[in-house]
Image (cartoon, rainbow, N blue to C red; front, side, top):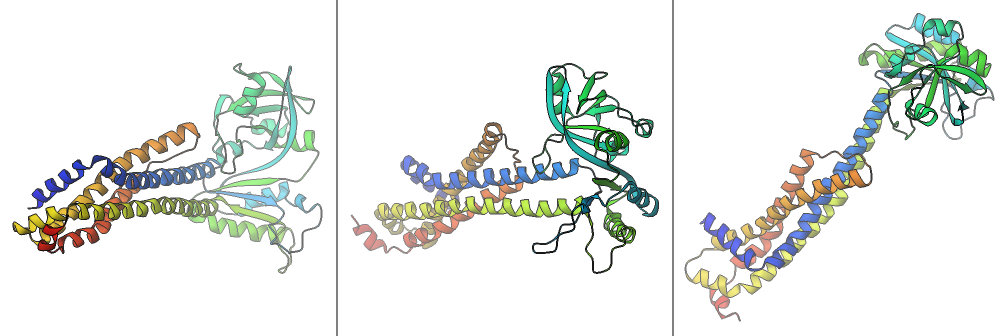
Amino acid sequence: MFWESVLIALDGLQMNKLRSVLTMLGIIIGVGAVIAMVSIGLGVQQKVQNSIASLGSNLLIVTPGTNSPPGAVRLAAGSNTTLTNRDMSAIVREIAGIHYAAPAVSQQYQIVYGKENWKTGVQGTTPEFLTIRSFKIAAGSFFTKSDDNTRARVAVLGNTVAINLFGSASPIGKTIRIDKAPFRVIGVLESKGQSSMGQDQDDTIIVPLTTAQERMMGITYLHSISIQVKNPELINKVQDDITKLLRTRHRLAPNVENDFTVRNLTALMATMTETTSTITLLLGNIAAISLAVGGIGIMNIMLVSVTERTREIGIRKALGATYYNILLQFIIEAVVIGITGGLLGILAGVAGAKVISVVAGWNTVISGAAILAAFGVSIVIGLFFGIYPARRAALLDPIEALRYE
């Protein structure tokens, strides 16, 4: 009787093709919207994770100044000069668990080569920066400790700077002018794209730390220290040890706030992942509302179908069809609408995610779990919203049904 009920249900849908398609449309849109929205949310989540990971693994960044809460007393002017080379040396010497550490200073400069010019950030740092920040050399080489010790005027270009100044030509060995001072280009970095904050990581020039501090900026303090911890289990301990060491070195009283900040990028990634997961869930739930609307559409059309086929139901009951036979027939009809709409919705959702990725340039990730969940919900909705009309049909009195015009 089950397969016979399936055939009868399919015949009923086939007799009203347009109505069946319009009924499925709500489910198709709902399933497609859920898959597309979740794909966008997962794409954002993946992009954020990749951007943070591209900054380096097991990374701590120490910067001068503090993140004071709203209303708190701000530090005095010039407090952003509290991080020094000696602090950097003390951290490397006294803190266990550190793999690499690289101090850095940075400032915006106008860069000139021939008739071309470009304004970008110039970073002064040490050779360890390349390993800590997971940069790779695409052409040429990186500067050495000897270059840093001798304050050499050498520069390594980010991909964006190289393209804007040299186009398709090789910049290796060429001389550029940074704030009117000549620098020889010795290398070009591989492209890393945008960071999680939308900044172009390739729009940079890297020079030796001493060159930047003494020959360009005339400073003795640091703007940041990037620290790579040996393994993730030690990162919180190293962060606490650095905080204690710098408080001691800067002679800060117990009731005085830090005049520096130690950022843990591993904790930042966890926070950002949690945030983007919440956004993805919100997008999916908003799209799922259309699935409920589609279910109401199924109930509406099934009630119409029961009314139209009242005499048919009466004849089937008169010929021996039981309550469960009639119930099964209409439930199957509703579930078939949900299944068919769900399958078409999957195709629409995957296609929509691909189109959004190509047209808008957004990163999208097709989730198998989202597809299965949306399809499962479409079946459940077909079943749930089909029960009431099916039960109403099954409870019809055969005599009254046969009299129905």
